[in-house]
Image 1 (cartoon, protein in one colour):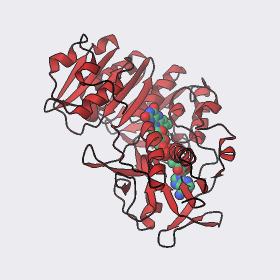
Image 2: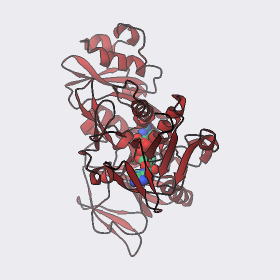
Image 3: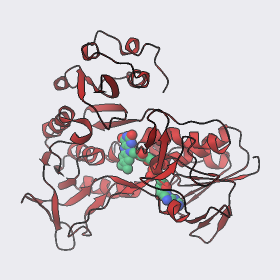
Length: 412
Ligand SMILES: Cc1cc2nc3c(=O)[nH]c(=O)nc-3n(C[C@H](O)[C@H](O)[C@H](O)COP(=O)(O)OP(=O)(O)OC[C@H]3O[C@@H](n4cnc5c(N)ncnc54)[C@H](O)[C@@H]3O)c2cc1C
């Protein structure tokens, strides 16, 4: 495969880590990493957290130091969009008019914010938060202070709300669910996060939805379906993300909740792979396709795709993992739990330090450690073991999780 050309579309975390891995694996052909954004690859978690609040340097957000791509002979092309993939001719077209043939193609096109479709959605002062450019605008708004309405109490909305409160803004969060993320985590965790925000002075308008945004050119208030009017200086919308699949779909690749790939991260045409937020990958452990929109998945799946592109044996089966920081609360969640019938707590949520386990038919399917550290690998090992566990033992802080997993902490 030496002297071959590998093209990576999407210069973000998954794409940059894939390029790094190709070189680490000894690939000495041409690597072309093409990104639509003007920046070199960066990580998005700081954009709702320390960087947004002005508490960390921009340099900390980048995946690699500035000179990395040149040193590694990775041709990083920024501010350029790949407009077409010709899967038959193995060729991509860029919006600067260039065309490149490829031997292997990796699509790490990510996801984009779901847009609001209500009257007034195009008013000035209605923001989304996905890119560094979005974040720069919102940093200025936080600097100016005032009142913000946040639409959506998911992770982006909740983290933004926490940062805005930490910067002293008045914050109202609107979400149709009765509790934040209740559908995914249930009532206890939802109530824990609601109380956290309320304790820090945010108003949570739950069980209500946006009817319209109102203002003369710029947003001045949000009208809810429940009849509330919320005066605000700006709005941040965090109502989920949709995978960017148009390029793959137009190229004739199979799509459906993302670019459909197998456990080797190979798409439905030879030589084409996908990873990160854009990929809906067959998961051997769960025996179903899963699309994971989290940092760790982009970090791990990019390199896995790189190895697969080189023909190394790959079967991507990591247990999904993500983290969130809001105010003084840091948490990690491991697992995948579309169904569960019981939530068991080790520690008291009221005390702010605990682990929650989601059980389905007596087996752990997910776990969340909140302000408790160095346990997520044990949780993942427990999930992977599929051993039945007693709720009483799980709840007992005297029983080390590692011993329950019946093995030393697994590395995945
Ligand atoms: C504000 C924010 C905070 C987050 N915080 C957390 C967190 O705390 N914990 C956590 O686990 N996860 C978090 N995430 C999720 C995490 O950042 C994503 O899972 C991760 O960024 C996915 O990386 P990716 O490389 O797959 O895709 P993306 O980061 O979406 O990057 C895809 C890139 O591809 C480019 N692109 C798309 N199409 C083309 C094309 N045709 N041509 C050229 N370029 C193209 C895009 O411009 C983009 O730069 C956060 C996400 C956001 C937005």
